[in-house]
Every structure is written in structure tokens, then in C-alpha cells.
Length: 204
Image (cartoon, rainbow, N blue to C red; front, side, top):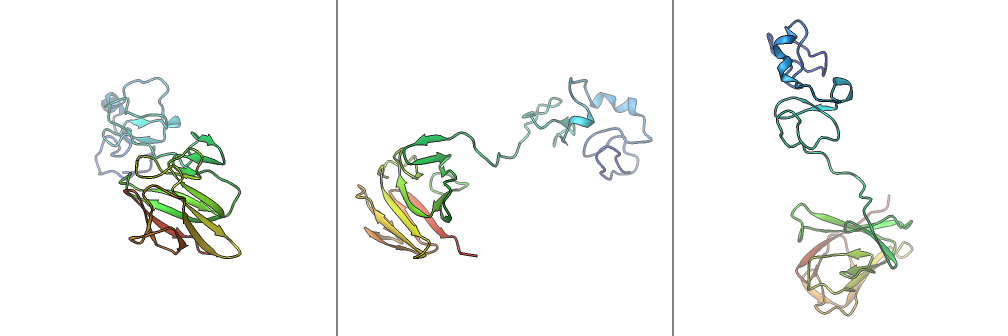
């Protein structure tokens, strides 16, 4: 039996839809009306989904189901508009904002966040550290200097050059402490207790 509200197939004889909990056509809607308490502003026309626990129709703004109280997990926004202006750079949640420069690569880390975080590397000089005036800011590791190291990429050279910026604890690339050199795809950079995987963006 197909639900006229959400289109889901239901077992024969069902009074309400297993997905959206709406009364099915040909059943006694009065017997299932108690499944939908009267809540101002709720109707099938302005809801986007049903509660995963009880099937009650939900609005996009709901964080909890108004019927059973179960939490509703909304997808994270694709753009974070909370940003910090700083000298020479703009930082958005640990990621450099759009600069008008060509994207050249990424630094990826799982050290401070088990789900991972990434930092775009752009054409030109990318200063990395804990300071407020860096291009890529990494918080939470006291062993990282304010200006720890930098990555320089020039499109004409097609090379990624790094330089330790006289940091207190040094820059380690592939388990070797180095003052300067060239980065290659999938090199591992260690700053203090933070490990960063360098990913070069191939040209296409």
C-alpha cells in the first residue's frame, strides 16, 4: 500500500505509513489521529521529513521532535560565515577563506579532531602557526610557534617549497627535522604533537 503523503510502500493492512506516520488511504483516519498532536505551524505542506523515532512530521528548523522529543540531527552547513579578520589573512574555522588565488593543495590532520580537518594551501606564501596573523592557523598545540613554518608555491615552478620560520621546536618532514626543502605529495609534516598530511592538487 503506497502512502499518498510520502510515496513509501507499506505492508498490507497498515493504518499509518511506516515512514511519515500519516494515515493511509482507505483506513480509518480517526483511529490514528492521536498520532499527530495539534502543533501550531505543522502540516504536510511545510514539513521536509519525519522523525526517525516516531515518524512525526518535522520542519527544517527542528532540533528535537515536537512529538516524542528525540534529537534531530541536521547536516552541517556547507559555509561557515563566522570568521576572524586578521592581518594578512582571513581564517574560517581553521581554514583560510577565499583569497582569489589558485588552490594548490591541502594540509590534512587528525591530531586535534578525530573526524579530521583540512587547511587549503594557495598559490604564493602560506604561513602556518598559532599566531593571529598567519594564513593557516592551528590552535590547541602549545608546541607550535606563532610563526612556525611556511609553504611557498609558484605556478610557473610547479614546486612546493617549505621553510622553518625559526620555530622553537622545529619542523619535521617525514620524521626528519629540516629547516627548508621541497614538499611532495603525501609528505607528513610534524609540528609539535600535530601531524599534517600534505596533499598536492594535480593540474587538470
